[in-house]
Amino acid sequence: MNPSNPTDISKLCIHTITTNPWNIEEAAQNYSAAGVKGITVWRDALQARNIQQTGQMLRDQGLSIVSLCRGGFFPAKDIDKRRLAIDDNRRAIEEAHQLGTSMIVLVCGADPRQSLEDSRKQIRDGIATVLADAVAAGVKLAIEPLHPMYADARSAINTLAQANDLAEEFNSPFVGVAVDVYHLWWDPALKKEIKRCGQNENLFAFHICDWRTPTTDFLNDRGLMGDGCIPVKQIRSWVEATGFNGFVEVEVFSNNYWKENQADYLKKVINAYKEHS
Image 1 (cartoon, rainbow, N blue to C red):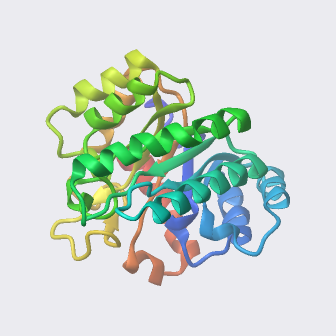
Image 2: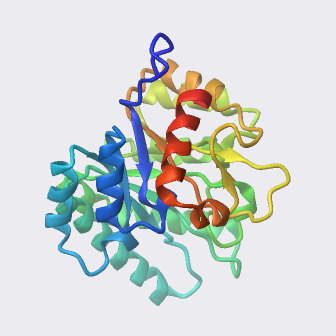
């Protein structure tokens, strides 16, 4: 946000999961009417829809489709499950292409029945297997490190350093990282690793929300910016110091906020973005 214009929301993107009770048509209409310019689409929002037509509908509402969430979940002790994951990621790449977005966010996955090292190797192998598909479709893959509390089953990539290492190993303009403050705010190496992203031009996405204290649910009790203890403005300054000029994506899973009138909640999202990011 331009500090000289605190009303500027031109870089605001909202994930469909943030206003989960709305279907994608309702989300598009309401985001657009409120002046929001970006949308990240969760795959569940596309069920039973013509994906190409949905993408056109979003563009007709004046929305940039920032990314598709999500691919990943590559690791499994069972080889058949790993093959199914590859198939699903190829479907996600095709969905992103049909939707008209150039990025998929990867929640990389883990399997508690095996070591983290094995899961990380399977993540690396999985990305390598689908990379040619992504390049052919013109779709970038953004590796999103998740908080260590998710290392058992949701992601064996838990620090930005690990995500940077993996992205740099591929050395491809189609493999980079997504920085989500919810997962990374605690990391003492965060500023250094964000700078490293910039040096390698692999910072693809930036997600914001807040960490409530005390939190009541590690998945579905995220706060809006200003609700908790994450220094969102400071982290954003580090991100933008790299030269990143993409959308700032509000991604909130909240059982409490989902119970509210979503039109009123959308106003809170926008105000929190203006005041605390």
